[in-house]
Image (cartoon, rainbow, N blue to C red; front, side, top):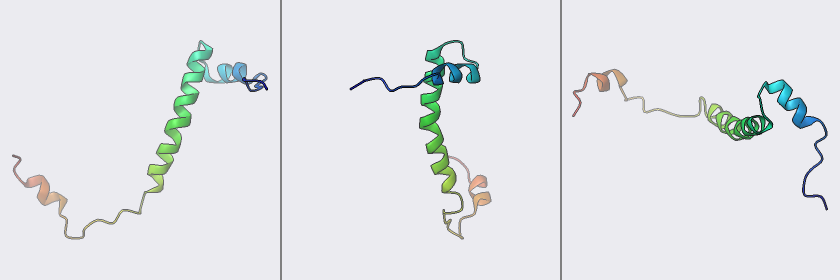
Length: 67
């Protein structure tokens, strides 16, 4: 059983598309994007789902002297 998946020309294509100088830079960027994108989408999915206390006055909090 092969330990390396068949990727064909994908690494070469990815390197050309991304304009990185090395395959390592391309791979590092790809891995980082695959980690951060789902996290960002999860955070965006929370938009509109957080209920705030209607009594909270952010302007009053700004005027309050800091300790």
